[in-house]
Image (cartoon, rainbow, N blue to C red; front, side, top):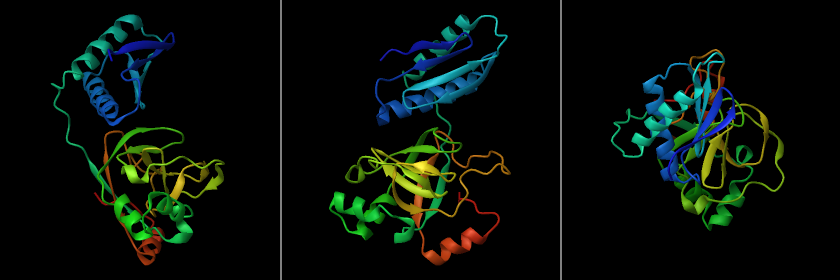
Length: 235
């Protein structure tokens, strides 16, 4: 579709790039966000990619918002021509323990897919995923690339509390809960790595455009990393 602007206030707007959130849309959003950041448009103070749009926040004193919106449309329009050279993607390896007490929905996910627990874990760790955008809570990454056999609905009733580090799946995506929050994704494991840490720069381990690989680990390694005060993913 042709990109268009939808204003959300006098000094903020969304660039709409797609009608659905398929993989093609995600790649287009990533390219467009990179191009807009590289352009460093005057008076743009923040931009946030989402599943089908990019939200752009302007300086409250911006003198010509319409002109900035037109420039943004021109930039993202060129991205659709696939002539832009994208920056190399960072690959982040996330260790995950799939033990039953950390994975309350793994049995149900495996049964739905017609797979054994071992095959389900192997499938989840076999893919190089892509972070499409962050949302829901600070550092919560919506990660695309989940194998089709593992696609499925969210829980009918969200849990009132999901432990930080829980790895979940829902729809066509997988995720990692950065903090302990309510949540309705189906939990299939947990990582000891701190996904969001206010003492780290940047505070969020994962960023839009990053690629993610999950690595299955045993409980002993999970506990060892958990005890470490400097838990981090292995690049």
